[in-house]
Image: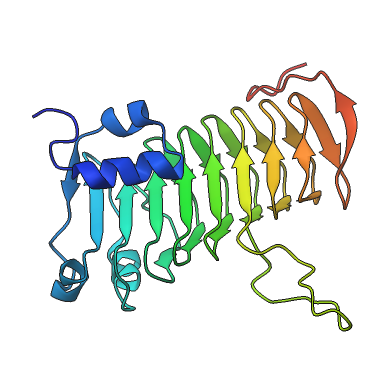
Length: 239
């Protein structure tokens, strides 16, 4: 069977527009899921695709299709045996999880008109949270290493405003981009309009908020600041 024989052309374009690499999408053979999915899900023009060898735990699948939404596209290319939840919170949500993603006890939430794109390989050791809402987006390029309790979110979920002017002060519908080969250390937070460059390291408990992190740098603190540049990190722990 040709690549994407089971993926509708309009859904392939939807994934591409959300930031998914077309080569990564086309590298997998997709099947549209019907078993275990309620009839209303398809009647409302929603689509769930699993690649060959990919899976969602039954409880996660049940939660995904619990609330009424329309025009949702979810494509999962990894065997997410240990994911805690994958939820969509409104119409027009788009989620792509590439092959080679491991999200141990991880939580994904994608709101209406929003998108999450996670390219593999991605290893999130435990309890990572990825949250996109208010037509915001999260895109992670390949070779991600996330330590425990990483939090990646477009918004704060609640409005903060100036009492005099009524102006909103915190992000709304922001866009987060994590470049290739990024290391997020334990308890790292990336939120708001944020762009983490290739090869960068976000230190333990650092908060990147509405910032651009230079490629091949180490940032630390809250708010994050560059503490070292021109670095290269490795998965190997050697002298």
